[in-house]
Length: 229
Image 1 (cartoon, rainbow, N blue to C red):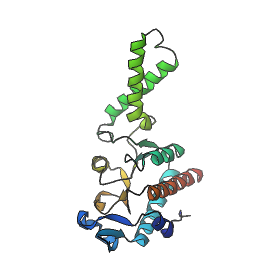
Image 2: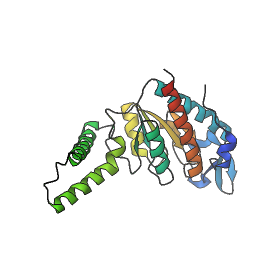
Image 3: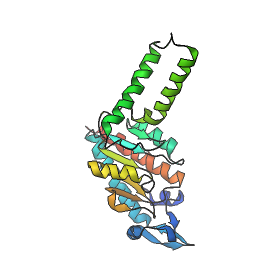
């Protein structure tokens, strides 16, 4: 069963507003309904259909045990991205995209291993004999690694799918995913390029309530896929 999307809910949460019409990408034309007060407005009937398609893909992928990496580094999306990723057992970035995550995963894996090792040593009391200053520096290093690599610490290999909240901002992540054949589900605003996104969701990527709604639907679809074996 396809996860149901409400166009009314999208409208109420402000998903229909694009950017100022002078800041648009003409490739987004087919997803736009028109213009209002110098701002582009999305055709939410199309958004609803494409969102349902993306959710079905996530559900099927989850059923097939594919690994998903969420990228939600903008302020409006950070907290919700982390919550949904953790609830679905997915990996996530909410601070910033780390260049080479997909194209140079072996290097990223070393940093993940360092974080895991240091946390284990801390838990086992292996730093107990260090001076106060040394322990402070170790604490800081663990906090730094946790901040950037904590969300991907369970990632064993290059993920199968990238879910990107702002495809215009996260252009580096999009390029890496395309070069490695990683499928992309992404929110594309009126200034973005939809061509490099396998499952584009055309809507406002700045409206926190709309982002929350979409992420909740994604959580539902992924968990639904996990229970259908």
